[in-house]
Length: 172
Image (cartoon, rainbow, N blue to C red):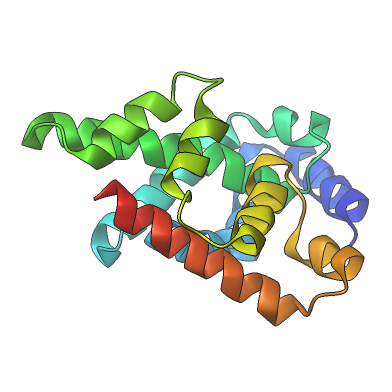
């Protein structure tokens, strides 16, 4: 679906209140976002709890989604990543710091984000690094990247999954 139409539909739901807008977001994106969360938090119960927390918190920030040049789903991913990293960091304080919590702490500091992600992917093939950079750091969609690079969408998706697996492995 076209990004503008999605934002227009979401905006019209928001005029009815935050609850209808949150329900629309949840019905459209909860499955995809849950799968995304599982890349970082493999425990399904924790991931489900985190999904609810993410939607609760981001519902209050919907104006940012409208103002963003990203699609609604990309905006959800970017903002969710911040909440996921906060969750990992807070969980680590109870258990003592691990490499994952230290990485999360570094990620939250700002400008070092790109450098840390690429440090975690330093052993990845160049094409993997390119896919990750385009999708996560520049906010392109997988479909857009596949279309403009001449690559198959399934191929781009596979490389992204492999990158997330490498990051998860290197974090912990």
